[in-house]
Length: 150
Ligand code: NI
Image (tube, rainbow, N blue to C red):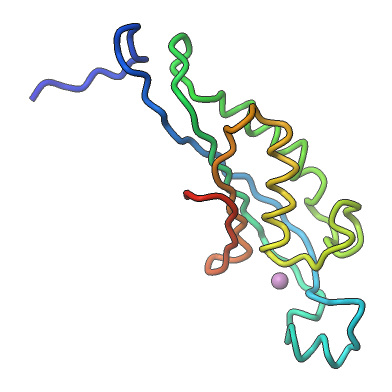
């Protein structure tokens, strides 16, 4: 078999759309607690997650688009990493997500709410239509995703 040449598409070729991704991680503390409920009600709804505890979170971001003919990139992953770190990681790393992050203050910091909020903070900083999916891993077993592909 002839080897497949790794190269950017030529001018006569259709330009493939490709999805690429980047993972970043952060450590943070939270409790699942609704201030509008009593302690007893919070314990009933959230169980032991109502107590303060920490997670080693992983944030996975997928962007997509046509491969740039000149660079061979869909997007420079260093640029994507910089956006993720500036807009999310440096704001949440080693913080209490219930009290320390102004843009999380009005919501219970579940993985679902983190994913939705992170999506909005990244979407506005990336070229339009490029953000395809975002997944927040709270543990090795639990995750929440916005978008349609990881
Ligand atoms: Ni938790």
